[in-house]
Amino acid sequence: MTDQMQIPEVPEVQEVRVQSPNLVNISDVDNKKARWYVVHVYSGHEKKIAEALRQRAQTLHLTDKIIQVLIPTQDKIQIRRGMRKTVSEKIFPGYMLVKLEMADDVWLAVRTTDGVTGFVGMSSKPTPLPKSEVEAIMKYTEQSGEASYKADFVDGEAVKVVEGPFNDFLGSVDKIDEEKGKVTVLLNIFGRETPVELDFLQIKKV
Image (cartoon, rainbow, N blue to C red; front, side, top):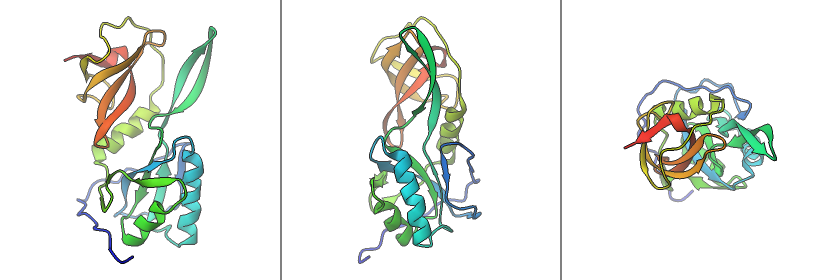
């Protein structure tokens, strides 16, 4: 590369390792410099792209720096024609979390993988996710259950998350599903408004 990517200073933080059925484990290397980054990909092709990145890391001998790829999903209760079915849904369609040690060759390998459109953040200076945000996403993927409550808020109303991994996050109501007892709230994640589905009791009016 002629213009080298600028690599930001990354403070030392506790490692967050993941065990998940939606995890592509590229390497078992214990790389203390590896951090989680958010990568934007073609929506609907996340698993295929994650596998392509795994193969690319192996081909380019970068498995000591590209460690894991996570596609956050959560089991949801879907109700259709009076029947309940458990399905696995992507929490952030079009996004993958990649654990890697940032360097010029690593950036280029990820960025040029088929289906990847770029890192979230400044294109020349990707920044890792804060540890607290990574842990919140991991906990959210482990949540399950069902609720049916009467909503006392309306679309567009400002709310605060009072329970769960996104506790204290502020957002606005985007969609209400009284049948499933769920509400979609727009929260500031990855530096942009991101829809997150929560139980009615997990939010309150601001």
